[in-house]
Length: 270
Image (cartoon, rainbow, N blue to C red; front, side, top):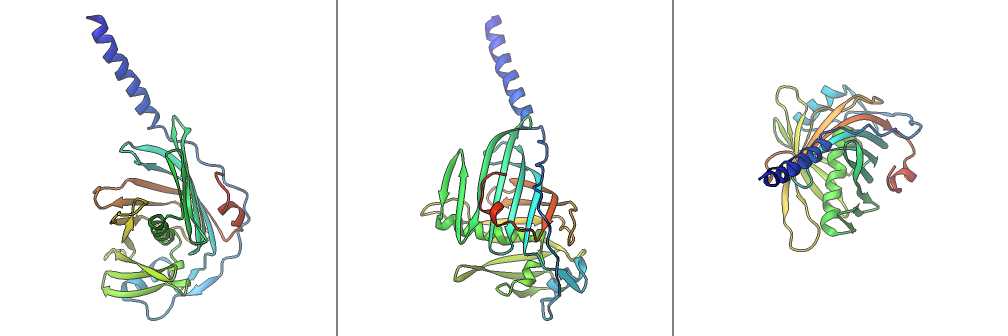
C-alpha cells in the first residue's frame, strides 16, 4: 500500500520540480561592446495612405531615424512544444537585408535549448538540437516575413527602403508590400483607431519546411517601438491563427543602432 502511494508522489514531486524550473527567468545576456553609428534623419514621405501617415507623424513627427543595423537584446516566453519556457535572446539585423536570431530557452536560468536561425544573403537557416535546415524554400519565405515584421521595432525601415510600398485599404488599414527575391510579399497592417499606432500585422506564412505544406495566417503585434537612439522597452507577440493565441511574448530590453554587425550576424551563438 505504501509503495502504491510513494511512487505517484515521487512522480508528482519530479514534475513539480521540472515545471518550476521553466518558470524561472534567466539573467539577461551581457551585450557586446558595439559602437553605435550616427543616426541620419529622413523626412516622412508625402503621399502615404492616411493611417500610415498618421502613424509616422504620431511616433516620430516630421522626420524619422534611418536604421541601417540594429541589435536587440531581451527576454521572452515561448511555447515551442506546448510548454511555456523562459528564454533570452539577441536579434541582429542588417535592416531589410539579413538577420540572425540567437535564443536560449532555460531551466532554472540555465541554458537548455539553443537556437540559431535567420536569413543571410537570401538563404534561411535553422540550427537547434531538435533539427537543422538550410535554404529550404518554405523557411526562406517565413524568414523573409520575419525580417520585415520585426521592423515594427524600427519602423522607419518601412519608409526608408525604396523597395517597400504602401497601399491604402481604409481609414485604419493598409497593405505593406515588401521584397522577396524578385517578387514581393504582403502584410495587412491594422492601425489602432484611437492611438494611431500599428496594432498588428497579418501575413500568410509557411510554418514548416518541406513540400506539401500550406501557408498559415501569422499575426505579429508590436506593443510599443523604441525611439531613435533609445534603449527603451518594447514588447511584441507572435501568433499562428490555427493556435488561437500567442506562442511567444518578446520583451526588448536593449537596442544598439547602426553598429558594424557583419561579423556578429554571420557568427553563431554570442
